[in-house]
Image (cartoon, rainbow, N blue to C red; front, side):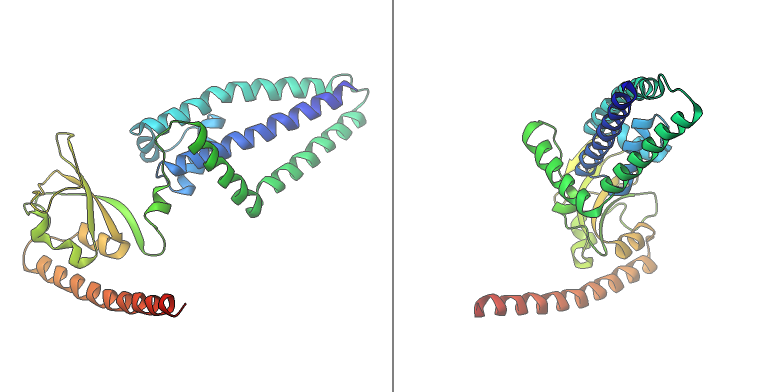
Length: 265
């Protein structure tokens, strides 16, 4: 029954492939990639199908992501030969076309069960938690789940804004922009010469050509990215400050309500 050995070997290879892709997805997500982008990058690298230019730059420019993708590319060859050998064993000695169809039916049914099991939401949650703990414990990769740490839920996001000549932010010190009044934080600045300013000071100057990493509500960040210098830009800033003041009023009320509940308990 050598074909049974072949089909078992094939299922083992497929299961390990799914685990490897899932592990890589979790690791890429922990470097700051979105879950969708991380899943696409992992599958693309492991199957050798390639990926889009923009997302490729996000991987190539990040040393940890490059390391993860490199391992996937190496494992891709092992997966190919494993599947090939398993298929040879599986269909070796088939006496007739009926026998081949019978074995193929076992393969299709087993693959369907395996895929259905691994795509279960409950299974994914448990596996992701185990993999994240394993990566944190047994590797020295500098990985963090930035989406979780920054609580990027709802309207909040981290994005990068390119400053050009005539932009509202260009030519100002950070403290003069009063971005905190809009609910926006500048996390870092990449200068046009490649140097990086982490946790910039209030007195730090913003120049045309800078790329700034900002945290805040998506709608505010999008408007800030297109805001131009002059009275129109100043008016847009004041409107954003007014909206943020309203948001802060609601937030203060929620905090006070929470404090009262904690005090009562």
